[in-house]
Length: 263
Image (spheres, one colour):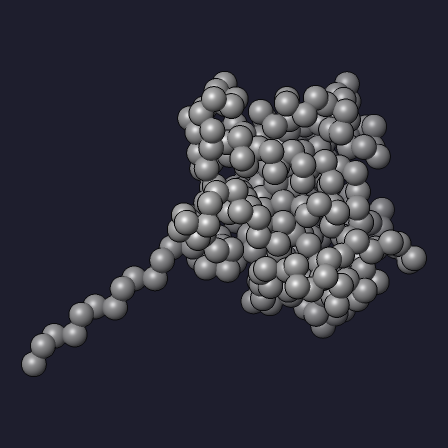
């Protein structure tokens, strides 16, 4: 009798580099995906565009990333558009020449060599914060530039991520999510449901995601989105935070092997 062949080993989960504007964005927008990929043995990391490493929020970010299994903070150190004390003596992120910030991010992409990059969508998420929108623009440029050897040679050897995923919210989910995470009456920036290309169930990791959100104690204390999460029941947290939505952007031709966020 022939001996059955061993089943093929499952493909390893793709590595993920998340790029977000502020400490806490990584946990609110992609904490479930980061925890899920880390649990599957993938390399994960986070680049944060604003706030200086010497501030209390940097220590909170380090704790959140420890909870998510996403390594040490990678902070670009620019000023938050709405918090002058975020990076004393530094320009606001939105005011820094874009070639400078793109070069900074290209270095992180080439150094970490992720298969997937995750960032804000073109709206900057539900809130539309200007730093979120600018992070989207910088990341889009950097993902393309990282794979081209004549662009930013000072940032290391070229590396082309296989996919860029934009954290977003579909119209059908935005009202409930926004009602719990944003101030009353805030404009909700969401996309038609058909624009969403990856709907990720992160329910098994929602407690980890919530713990990472609550690690941002400064934002909990001032009643920002992490503070609103702190006030929710476990059932509402699971419902509001247990799914993440993404729009896939193709930085390379479709003839190349696809790297899926949900792999």
